[in-house]
Length: 100
Image (tube, rainbow, N blue to C red; front, side, top):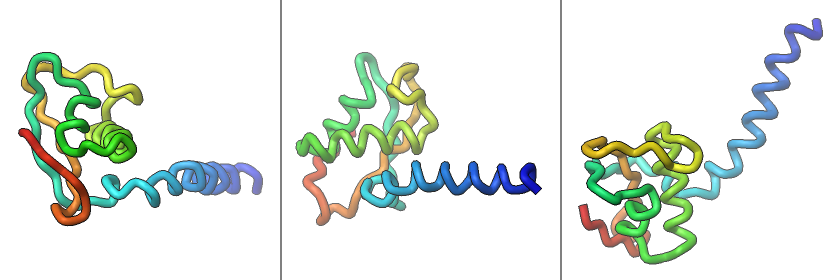
């Protein structure tokens, strides 16, 4: 009985840890994306800064870019020419100033 219950408990705990972040980060709920090609000196932070001037929003977007694209937790390992999906909010919901 314990062996059958363990995967369920692990799944519930994982959901409890990850779920609250998804509820508060609007970018992770977005269904609109821009495709951006990585250029010299681009970073996840610089990409996020292109889309918003709000520091809190930039941190949320940085995390969303990392999660949506399956990047390393710190956003490292970008390659020149790599294409990333950048979640965008409805243009009226945020101060997004995209510079693709």
